[in-house]
Each structure stands twice: as structure tokens, then as C-alpha cells.
Image (cartoon, rainbow, N blue to C red; front, side, top):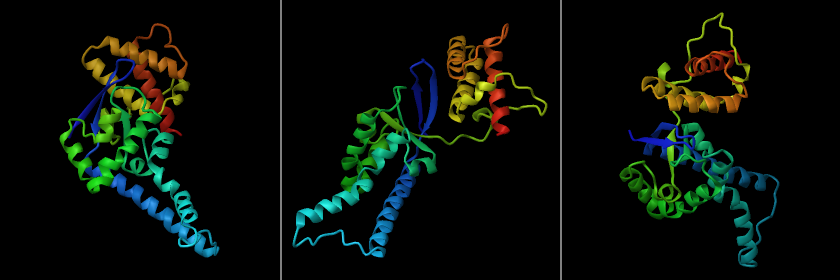
Length: 248
């Protein structure tokens, strides 16, 4: 199980598990099935409506090829469009819980996704994916050539089900929340905050604690109440978040 350490632009180090080859293959085949389903549904619609949209190849080969290319655009650009719109995921990746991220801590851009997409010609289309499997198996961060070229990696978003590795917090039944704006945080935000908070407390890393505090304040728009320590503030934010999300 390879682990990827990513240091964010706020100098917070986050540990992720690199997606295994099996997870990536499963996501890939789910996406393939979706593309096949698109082609089948399109063919059925054309047949049902008795639409004659394909000119004869013998009579007009250029028009024939133009129509084929037009109908194939959603299949060809499926991956790059979805990874751009879904921030590093396709439907297959989302179902398998994997995601493309930049290993330098910055958010992946369209150019990064484009490099990954164009490199699929070498990684996946050539030799039926053997090049990608060899690269993933031999690289330290489980990257295919497209990932190495774009500075990205595919991580697993699956968490262990122990409370220390989830966003879950023990919240009493009569608990009274303090910071209502914590609902501005996402589940992923809360998970990252908790993981780094526990690590910082364990290592007495006050610099990271202060960075986490600043980032929380920036997102929720609320300052810690008077005379509350940074540690107590972050604990309270996590408990408030779990209180509100558990009751949604």
C-alpha cells in the first residue's frame, strides 16, 4: 500500500493512500461501460426515430466521417471533460472513490487533465494498457506516464472505519453547538482538519494548529470566542460540524 504525502500551499502535510491498480482498472471499466451505453442508446434512438443521419460512405466519405466524429465527441472527450468539471473524477472514479490530485499541493488545472488525457494514447491505447500498468507498478507514487508528466497522482478516498480516521466525533445527545457556520465546511474539509489536528496535537506542532485555525476561520467566517485556545476551538468546530451534519 503506497502512501502519498502532499504538502498544501499552507504548508500542511496530508497523507493519502495511492489508488491500487485494481481500483483504477475498475473505475476505467465503469467509464467504458458508460461510453458503450451511450453508443447503444444513441443507436436505438436513431433506429426508433428512423433518422437517416449517416450518408453513404461510398457516395460522400467526408460527410460520413464528419458525422461519425460528431457523434463520437462525447466518448472521445469523456474523461477530460468529467475530470475538469468534477475536480479530478469521472463517474467511474467517483463510484470507486478515487481522485486525481496534484502532488505539489496545488489544485489540478485543465492543463494537468489535458496532459493526462493526451498521454492515454501511450499509457492505455498502446499495448492495451500494459505501459500504464508497468508504470504504476514501478513508480513510487503509483503514477502512469501521464501522471508523471502532469505532476498528478490518483489517490483513494476510502477511509478506515475507525473513529480516528473519519470525521466522526463523539457528540452528546444534549450537546449545544457554538459555531453554526461550520456547515460551510465539506466532509472532505472536516476529514482533513481532523487528520492534521490529531497529528499536530500528538507532535505538539503548534504551527500546524495555528494554520488549521486560520483556514477554519477563513472558511466559516467566525473567530474563536474570547479566551478559547486554538486546540479547544478546533475540537469545538469538529464537534459542531458532526452535530449539524448528523441532524441534516
